[in-house]
Length: 372
Image (cartoon, rainbow, N blue to C red; front, top):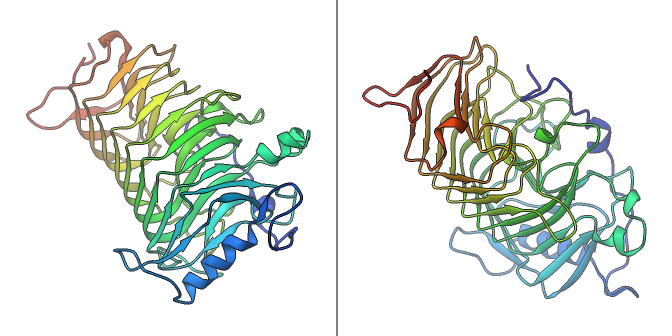
């Protein structure tokens, strides 16, 4: 098992992922104007119990009323549930220890592996801000590192039109052992970098697989993601924080468990501090029609040692005002050749395009800006 994409530094989150529920606040509106996040959890539990209307996919809808909600522990989304937070602003006040530090997590029983956890889940809308409450109380330094939405050991997942602000260190959306997952029309703005990790560590949308250090629930069985669509999203800096490290990527890999079927299409990515769009150890990849502007690097596809990859298409993307990193690159490890590659129709200067190692074009095609 290799836990790396651009570095050998490990994540080491186990102590932060394990723990019982932490602080709670009373139901109703607090003196600060917040509504307790427990009000949302009650709606989710009612949906679990089959109460309320269904959407077109048969999911019970938990519709959150307009208001600003304070979470002190994660919201747990059950199977066949649609969390509609369109009218809600949701902030966090997680303690330094004692809870899993993600604002949303799907329900997964102990020992559950593969894609057998709670699935057929939709999350729509909402303005999600994990650090705002700490800033308002003059305690910004006490804000813990967090994810916002984490889905693990699941299938048939839709995350759409959510707005995510100023995540500290970790990820806006993490799909971890997810089959048939879609992230669509979301806005992810602002990231607080971890001084102990490289900028490649800061993926707004991360594809992950559960190892001992990053298993949020269920088994650490290294189940990869399959059939993922990331489309129509915007990734940018915010008014108070700089851009993300990357819009997409992975930094936990295992040669025997590649992600399969990754589509990253028609997204707008600005001001990332490492690469704009990346995949690592992923088969059957299509990166199409994205616009990247002002990012340190552009589109970057990479294999890892011991795992050949095939079927990579990078087409119709536009990269402007990039930095010192490659604006488009395909990097094959010495023991991980990449074959059946299509790179065409991208608006990228040829001097900013690079191929590393054994990169073989699809039969009958020629790579744009081929190596000399």
